[in-house]
Amino acid sequence: MARKRRKLPNGIGSITKLGKTKAGKNRLSPYMARLPAYYDIEGKEIRKVIGCFRTYNEAQEALLNYNGLDNKADKLIDIYNAYKQSKDFRDLTRKTQVKYDTAFSHFEQLHTQKIININRYQLQKVIDDKVEEGYYTVENGKEVHKNYSKATIRQLKTTIVKVFEFAIDNNMLKINIAKGLKVKGEKENTTKGKDLFKPSEIRIMYSLREKIPFLNHLIVLCFTGLRTGEYRGLKSENINFEDNVIENYGIKTEAGMDRKVIILPNIKPILIQLVKESNTGYIYEKDGKHVSENTFYKEYYQALKQAGLKRRKPYNGRYTFATNMYRSKVDKKAITAQMGHTNFNITDKYYILNDEEYLAAEMKKMQ
Image 1 (cartoon, rainbow, N blue to C red):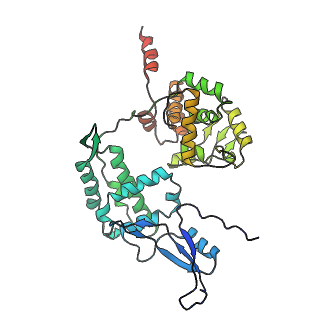
Image 2: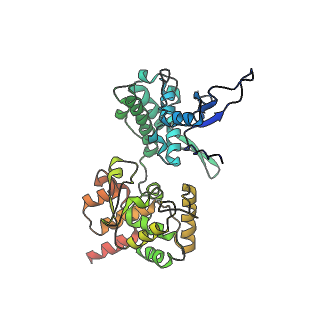
Image 3: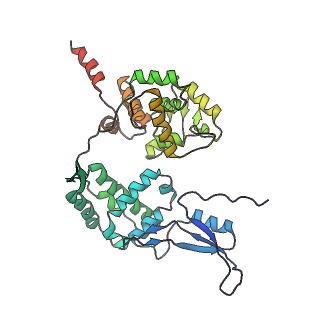
């Protein structure tokens, strides 16, 4: 029986076995390896062929090891498309990858320029123009002009910095001029869409977790502060029950990648149960399979509805964790370390929330 070939990871490209030549002869190297499709500024689909190989395995190795660059790949769009083949980009969530693609599209006027000839003024002008132009949206049947948020403009800088870093790593540049770009824009509402899971709601989760198994995952999120992407990728091997820590799992920032999250006594039995039940090695799975981000979100919202809990995003478990640490008077350095941040100001500004119930209780202290 023929051995089944290993499926290529998403975003790597494809391998096609070519037929005979026009002369009817078999090809010496019939396996053509192509990169994923991308589109130029005119919307034309481009699929780069990196070579033809004698065997499928040789073509597969070429795709997996391809760094995306050759002597002709010196335009900004070439560098970006090469960066998209890197492990750094492939490890991002699909949602974040889309953000990068959208941000890079705003640099359209520079796409065909050689990266070595692009200066900081040109990059800054793209950002400043976006701040000045804003965008239009429809509200109540009327077209309304809006300003981009600072977070949206910041994504432009983040993306172009990554592209220039990639060029430096591949010996095309020596200095990352994008790091000095200034970010302006409408100040974002740092509490919009953020909410806490209240103690009463967490008690409901515990009481219903056997009836609604997904609540086990939500409880863990509320007491570890893990990002949803981190949690979906969490494996049994990352959980050290002897030292009571979750380790070697982080994403997003260097501080996040290095952090160790303490396993609190109230979630240890849940984690032990999840490890025992795992068939794939992942803590979160469905029907014995490690499934997609969409499935995770679908199960999450279904569990909230079944438990009669207010609908809110999964990331609110992270806000709950940060806020409860702060209210429990955990040391600021410990809070920062557990959140995987570089300083407490980030945690304080974006993650620690004040709800009306908490504020009312605190103000009673003045009586």
